[in-house]
Image 1 (cartoon, helix red, strand yellow):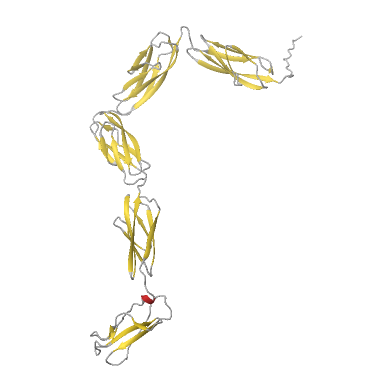
Image 2 (cartoon, helix red, strand yellow; image 1 turned 60 degrees about the horizontal axis):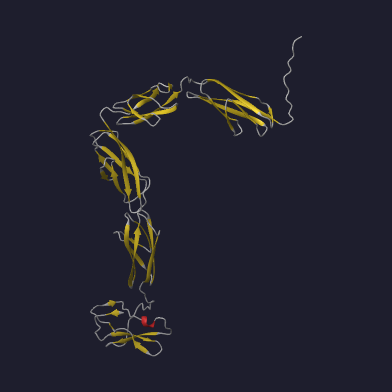
Length: 427
């Protein structure tokens, strides 16, 4: 409507509406005089008539200068509605630290609708769809706000962000370390969030942190354990710490030997050799008895073959070596000249005889006939169940040695003719 300083307060315009029962004044009367000159915008709320048909709008001029009115760009626009029904969802439903979370909001109301987000961790976002990544685990209150030209609506929800489970925990250290110096221990992981590390150094002392240090009080080998923990998992890893004396180094060249075979009741001497400093030797003689020293002796109580083990240790390393001890009866010696023979070829259903011979004392013979059956003795017999060629093995054993030989057995079908070689005597 055009304003002019020539107008007075008596120059006014009244908007009227006829919805079928005559014209009625709507809204306040608008004064054309406000001390200025020019076109100005005025609005009147017609929301009460929304949805009705055949509604007439009139402009009634009231003034001392007659009924002339100057109107421009008269428009009736659709009524605006405030945002309602605001809600939002997010994916994934169980998000983790460092994982993008997508929020989607929806509401109704006069467009355009503008969405803003407060993710509860001090970060903000915009748009009906907004993505955010949380740096820490915990419960966060997310606030969505939707706004248009006539109003605002707010909706909130609490989202829980979970830690990433711990995997790939590994513990290492920089030993061997000289006594009195510091050992540094480090834990690493492949995955995990908000992880705390608790150490047990293996000497009764504790520590905390991904990287720690410890000065051990005595020479030795320790198992240090680190426990990695967050809100969803706990994992443990170990690392071996070696504290050495000055001059110690890894043990090398370990070997063990003995003076057997030894006749029962006599002494067997056992000797260990190794290269290294501050070495100790611990023996297990294989008969339940123990000993210590680089050279030891043992009188075994029974005939037999024993595995004696020596454990060689210093502050840096531990090495084990074995030696076989043979205790014999009087007159025993190693088995020699073992041979095996049999009476085949044999017709199926008939007996095959097998014989073993050897040189030595106190010998026992154990047979495997090659068809899954067993026997014992220098001479044995076997009736094979099927035609075929079998490898029969005999094991000869005494207190000193064990020797194995085999012989081939041929079983032929019934009715098979066996021809003896013809020997011609010269005339």
